[in-house]
Image 1 (cartoon, rainbow, N blue to C red):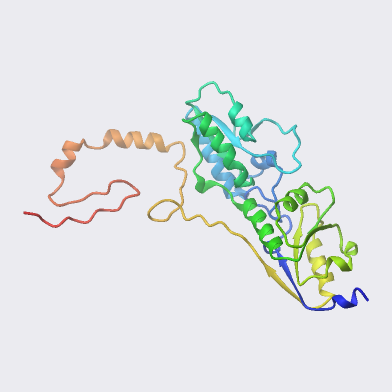
Image 2: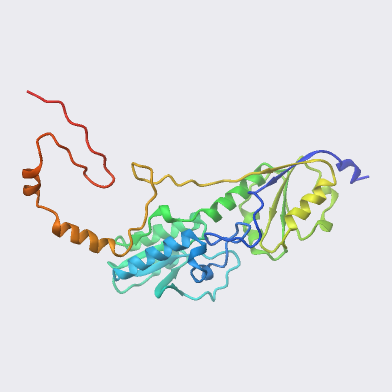
Length: 309
């Protein structure tokens, strides 16, 4: 009789669309959760645009003689034995995982220090580390924020949004999954958060809800979320909706384009161009009256001013 009373239509909210198992990009696993952070630079760079940009930027900083730091907050359940030095392409990266580590950091030359943010990190966890690092080393050079990866941050925000709109949030995965604790702690829900491994653990009192949030954890098997939807559909017609929080980068340039790392050869090119460029006096003598020139690559040609006098 308890199950009979549950026969009705209901809504199921997913935190983002179902993804292809095994797909990976930007340091995330197929379901959008963080991969083990110490492995991010060891994976093929061609598979992750954010990793490519971070590796290129780290190489540029290293070519300038900088000590390069990797801002990589501890992921849920990470072991304290994560190697302190990571690398890609021969570039050593000293890992900084917390604001306390940034404040206690000692380097040989504070004027030769730079950092990159690891793809697959939660940006909100990285910002305090960067703030502490800049407070300790005012001359530190940082990776442009346009290169930061928001995939995992958006995933967690999507889960919070689903939880707030649901009567019950079902987390599908193992009991010892560290991501379950993080997601449950970050959810402000009107209803409950329930962790289940498989459909036969569902109980009638868990599903007496108009809206059910459904999140698949990394420890859930392939197809676990789809199987759960099939079982829920046995209690009545479902309305399945994807709710996704997405961070869109618009760039800080007037033309709206994102920042692109110029690469280590850009400095030499700029110096060569400066040597070949005419002096200001020579340029003025060549310029015809009333002609305007661009102030830089980000500026537009100024309109002519009306004649006066």
